[in-house]
Image (cartoon, rainbow, N blue to C red):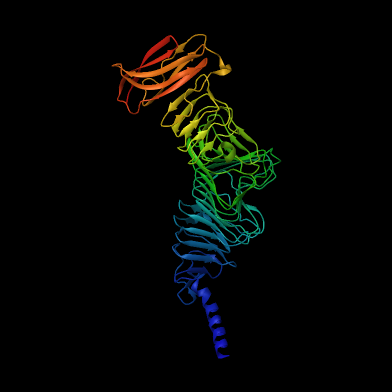
Length: 518
């Protein structure tokens, strides 16, 4: 029995000490309403208890304005540690949240100070349960949402502001944080310079049914490791409003999370960097809709990711889509949403296991890149109007491709399974006479292409010689049907200089000169 009472007393002692352990010597808290610069407005923790402060806080301490208090900032104050507001702050124009400083909004409703938010400062939202604070439309630097008791959907009413750093979402209770919800017919524009990091909770661009237009210019990454992250959770007038989330320079990864879109007709993410961006979809995701558009000039590399759900997926002319998925385009885009893959776009296959292009690849493309040492198999007859780049591995063209009028092949280390497969132009027009074009490019390093045409079936030999008449390569020898053909010559093992190529078809022979420059 004595042991039992001893344990109870010990637990009570620990409970009484616990709040003390949360304080550090030198912390401040308000003790009533008053001016910031007045010492009597404050108490200071001396290591044992709260005592009357001798001086007002400078901003380099942990400072709490209690819920029953109102403090007016009547002097310039720079917060370099933490200011936790549970009450009312006046005179926010004199307040600076400095680099490394944190303003913690630890209450429901209330108001954020109209402060100067320096680079490196953080707005830390913790206390909201049902009503967002006033003065939310400011150009903050970092913003963190950690509101485990949020019970309804709230937004910050952002418009024409710039978030200079990262947005981090930790918890949102049963509610959802949204950046904005403009009125019907209005347009809101938000710039985010840093990353959007969603660890849990719910976060989206908007959540309104108003037919408004929202533009987000985002220059960082999107990293989602939990919760629900969506481009739009409002119908926006059933699509008469719009949301465009432009990912101008970063990449996007999502794992163990959900994504959806309530404005399927007119809200999506746009990858538009001039260069390569990645979309990485990990395990454990529930992608009801992840709408994606790849803009002209941008390249989106999906890796081995699989895009599921009902979201649209659009690749515009001049854009590039890359996939390492073994099932090619169909394997990568396995959702049931609308897929619009422009014939003027470029497609790259860069897996590490054998791939097929799939019949979801358009039957006409611009450039196609084969960069897979394990090989890529063409799944349907395809017209290539740009360049077929053979970077690595064997491109199985048992199902033949056709080069368009400006099409060419660049041998950069890969190869064709059937190098002599017909590559006739539109309509498979048979040449009226035997011809051999000048190789292209010329000069070249290390590969070039030789194009020729046969008016009838012939025995053909395509050979390359040094200027001394020594044979250095046989590109093809055998019978070929009437048509237009293209041979690739890789001179990576030869020295710079002039070479001669000879194409003999039956009794006809054409000889031309080409130049290798390394």
